[in-house]
Length: 161
Length: 245
Image (cartoon, rainbow over all chains, first blue to last red; front, side, top):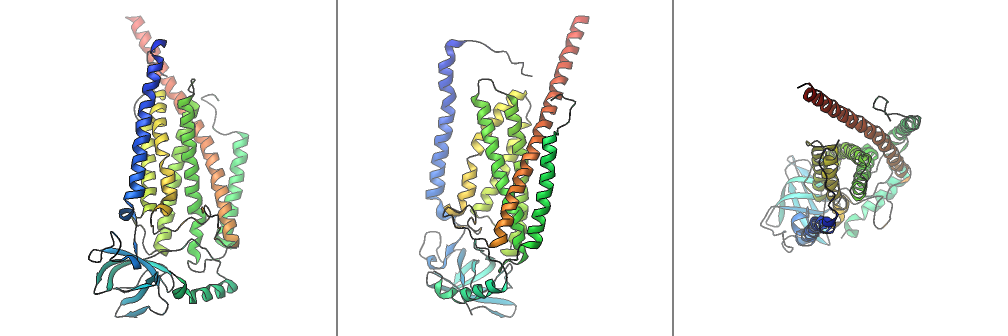
């Protein structure tokens, strides 16, 4: 129950109406400005990763800093030895060797996009964290589909990028 | 509806039965009839709950904003709009939480980690926190109309986060994949029964949301009526005290 006293001063109505719109206009303007800043100027800060071909060339992807690098695991490049894993990531025809101390989790496999966290030392990404980046395609697992998927996967290294 | 009546009607009871039947069908299609994914295996089945959850949350928050806008714009401000807005937001928060939990489990199995601070996950967490804040604002001291006015303004601002969350995967590079169904290029990338199961999940969760909102907004009406009656009793007692002196 609202017990607040009310006044019926009609003469002040138009100015009140104007005043009611002002905060809305200010909020919309501020949010629009914020939206432009976030979507146009903070892109490199908000982007989760750099692609392999951008390491050392794109703003925010300088080689001397800790990076998250995204690329496709090259077919036949995965090697596991001494409890570690090494493989080659490729994107836009550029390649980088990745060394990871452990067994990558998730659905890590060849011909799949991954994001590797780490530092580039002498042209090799020394990674301490691997994340598998799943695509937005969902393919049923049955024999016919599997054959097709295997054929597509066989060509992944040359078609990606 | 009188304060002593329940929150169900024959229509809501029928709707409830329909939701149960659809939920059983979803469980059958999601867990048994639809195939495993060629890469993810059975992990893909989490999608039949994860995607409908965030879809329902979007609907809930849009409904909250619409009802809040109607409440503020009408000369005769009916608190019914505010109650639907509040009920919808509560259920929306619940569904965002379900989406975050199921997404986190899916991420552990697919990405190899429960959580990353990429644009999609971070903006979704922010959306969740915003609407928890909205619910907190509704609990502030004040009259029903004060509650309605404050929360309506907040709902109209909070709704601007929805496009940010949804399009975050297009605006920025994210570990989270792009949309599979709500793709701007309209290319559906789900095989056979996977798409049907997902569609069934969307229908089931949407109807469940409607059922929950109907009951919750009626519960809120009972709460408001109870609070009003309590105030009326307090005023009457005070008048009696004043009359006795």
